[in-house]
Image (cartoon, rainbow, N blue to C red):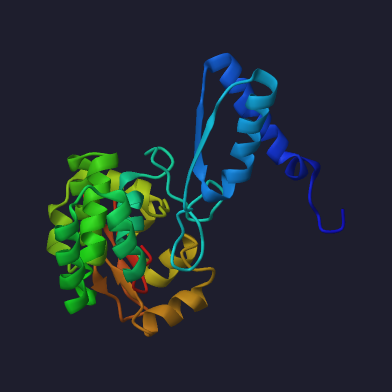
Length: 263
């Protein structure tokens, strides 16, 4: 049709209704749960079960989970979070909750954690006294990461976050283990460059362009001049800055930061 509804969309309700009927007759399934937008589809199944099998089945829906910008949680959403650590690593999962808006954090902490009402109210009060401390987001991220993954995963995610977004210095970077760096390499974009070009010494502009961190030397030069590049948490101000083996962390890594949030 001109409005672009496909046949599968048009028959979706019938297909889901029949699916409930199939599960009822073959698996003795009597209850289907879903978001409130599924009500019609589930009731269609219950009606089919009543008419075709003379049986009784039930629908259970709850309001759709949405973000304050109106976007919903869903399989097809961009930036979606999965419970499976292969699809969303514990670090990315932790980051998702940590970056929630104040409004979302206040709603989600009631929905997704087992904290009691009093404690949540105190957290909301403390948060509004100084929102920049992100008290709600930190607690939400802690509770839900520990619950879905583990205490160890939470600690590691928090550790990575402090290094990347906290006040970590070169000293902190040097204290990190090789495992930490291997973990980092899975979480943030990684580029490989030959050890030879580093040991000979390479200027920062060439390194940034060759690894495609910037599309051209001109762009890299401009960013360095504007103070937007740090290497191993130290700001680079000189376009002729040379990178050599002495800067390598664990003899093989450099942590490059572009702007505030890109590593």
